[in-house]
Structures are given as structure tokens and as C-alpha cells.
Amino acid sequence: MAILLGCGGCEIVTLATVSTMLDIAGTVATTGPEVFSMGKLSTALMADDGEIQKAVRRAGADLHLHLVRDRQEKSYRNIWDFQFQDDRKSKIEVTVEKRAGMLCWLRVNVGIFGSEPTARLIMHRIESHLPPTAAAPGTK
Image 1 (cartoon, rainbow, N blue to C red):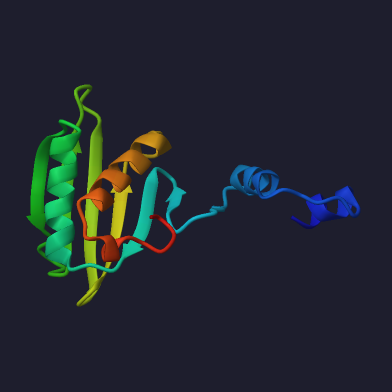
Image 2 (image 1 turned 45 degrees about the horizontal axis):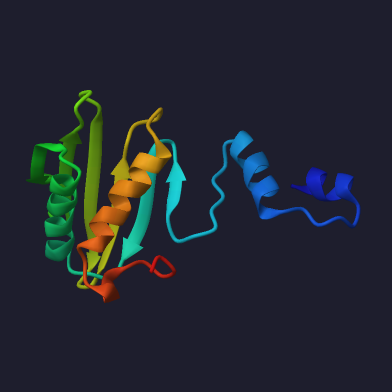
């Protein structure tokens, strides 16, 4: 980033330029509450974990994804794990981790070579099935 600023003199460097350069370096830059890195899209939500689990199932049904796995992690009682498959047999994993009564982390994993737009679509479909107060800040 120092190189970008040093070479540009007093010119304004856009966030898109900085984001592109950081992405090339393997670092994540984002302008919203969701972070996409290495095939995983993550956010935090203010919602009950049961509400989020129902929303994940409904989002999968909306997109006609085949539900392969829907289970609570054996080692971690606060984590719920889902796996979906599309028509091309690509796996999509969704993890809901309860951090507090009304705080959950949500991660959509489309694989390291997976599609970021696909991950974002799934995340937004999940959020659409949650109460308006559950959305991550800035998403609605």
C-alpha cells in the first residue's frame, strides 16, 4: 500500500485499486460487513441460531440445492454444519456458529476455486429469511 501511495504522489488512490492490490498480495479487503477469502464468505448476525438454521434450509430450498448434511458438530455443541450440492455435484458448506444468545457467525464455503457471486447469493438468500433485525450491519 505504501508503494501505491508513494508512486501516486498526491493523487487519490481508489478503494478498488487498493483492494485489487491487496487481493493480489493474498490479503482480504472489503467494503461491507461480509468478507470473502479463500472460497469462504463470512459475516456476523444478530439472531438466534435456530432462526439462522431454518433460514439456511429455506435458502437451500429456494435455490433448489440438494441438502446432503444438516447436523450439529459432535465436538462443538455451538456449531451447526450444513452441506448442499448443486446439479453439477459441487459442494457448498454453510456453518452457523452460536457465539452468544443473539450473536452468530455465518460462513458460506464454496471451495477455494468456488464462485464469490454464488456465495454472496446464498448468503443473501439466508439473510432474506431472517427478521429485519438479524441482518449484519449495512446489508439492508
